Image (cartoon, rainbow, N blue to C red; front, side):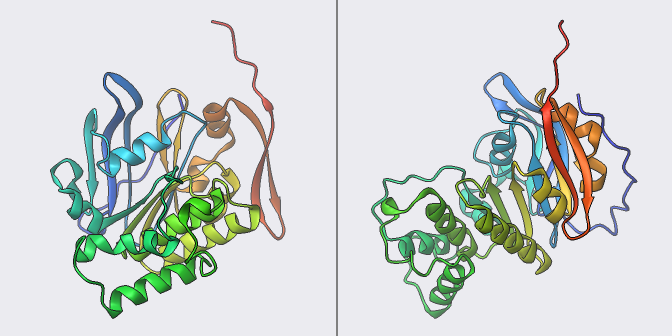
Length: 279
């Protein structure tokens, strides 16, 4: 169990409405609880990073918040509205979703995949206008995907396909972006570009929720952190409050060293797996 930090109470009259929020949210499948009683939120201008070991439920909790799977208990909200009561198109106008795995068998051009992000605004059959074309081009430019635009999606590498899927979310022009491990398959340079882009989008006024494995990227770029443990417990707060020596070791069953580099800033490095105590 990860010990929760004590957080100061916020004045509800002064706090802006969160764009993504969970209140005592239990997420899982059928009778199997994966993440239990999680509470967190992120509003406009905030980058929320979700971390935790493999299989802890990062994808599950994001899917639940997006309304892709039902909550077992508690409530998930998008833009202040309970996800369970929102229709798919209403959700798509608030939040754009980038899944962890994209179907590589699609034969559409990458540009056509990116253009699908406009369906939430225009509808499936409405013709595109100049505004749509500009949004698509801007999304392609943001992800440096110009050389990919006319290639078949099925011909792209994993990293190239991921960039196209993120561009599709950007073309959707929602106030909230939710991304499930978008840095997977990206080389280190592209990973840095991605995190810098997400941080820039948050600074421009969007809310961004993203699951990652890189603790250092979370510490460097995030405004808020949700750390999920193997037992389904979670803690939420600022990176300095959450990504502590004790919390990281409890979550990952791993020994870390913590340092502070003059150029990079604070960092952590895994040293060894902790020896589990016998029952």
